[in-house]
Length: 444
Image 1 (cartoon, rainbow, N blue to C red):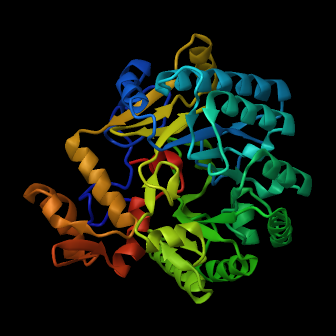
Image 2 (cartoon, helix red, strand yellow):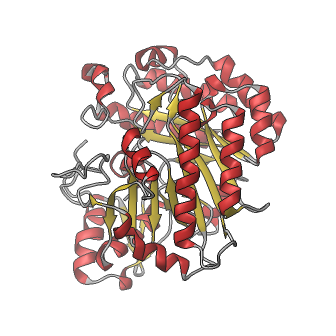
Image 3 (cartoon, rainbow, N blue to C red):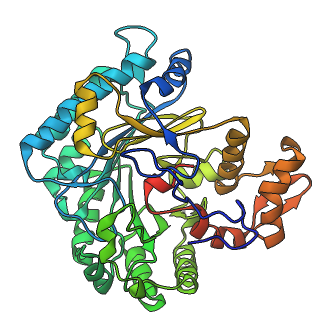
């Protein structure tokens, strides 16, 4: 979707494809360049010299039982246990290579403030494969009782036994990958999961006593209407998740060829998207949820809502977090990582990923390397997204003109006593420009 004239950044799509895409990688934006281990080495060295810096691990598990039309992840339909075992083996190789780069003292694994398992459908893996993976992580890094361990869960693959097993591994936060609860929309995208199934999974998860249970809801899916959205919001509120992230779906058949099967005429208009996002916001506000950042709705006692009130909410390639200044190490096929000054993505094809690791090389493919101006731009953008004020004195005249003036002119932000903060209008419209359902397009 093209941005409206005057929206910052001006005349640029939310996360446009680059003119020349790095080989074997999805786009990280128009500034992406090819990457390899040599490019990353200085950033790893800087991280090694800060042994107390906050560190998160983003583990991408791409395997799925099937692929729905809404899928905009690096995903592989796989049912062969030996192929998954091969992947887990080489994840151990990648973990070891990264740990060696960033660990100052041999034998002392860096502490992880957060571990996130994303997909794909991470719970498509067997219990043995998941247990082996957690053992590999613990071999190379330190996980303690304060480590925030989260996992994306395909509710169609979840069971009481599996959820108990995940809790036993140390997973405390789960996010159910739902997309929509409307039966017609589910048929359009090929992802059927009844409301009764979701009720059962959430009930079991509460019984298992996960610390938080989140969900997603995509706006812009084929077959969605304001009427269906209104009913979906009522149904999701009745499920009472701890938080919900509402993301816009964009058909990108060039990056995700299977989406060519999505008929453009079945997609809702921009006007309907705006109406539907407003319905989500109002429905969750009436149910007592707080609006966090641009597009998360959380119960008042959740860690994200508390972080926003305390002005500690942050945003990185993993999404919103209650902890600031975390560097993110991405491992696995197509995984995203983020170190101070660089955002990086691994190769997105399985054979090259295996080949690089079996040759002793990290599988980086693309990166966005930030100069000082880009670093400030990202900091300003994320501060605004996280509901924090931006002191205009911290910006030069050209930065103010390029980044903040368009927001002020459109009424998306207000400037009061030298500080800029997004307005409710900005928070309602900018999710359709600054956010995306695909992690590959949320990085910068």
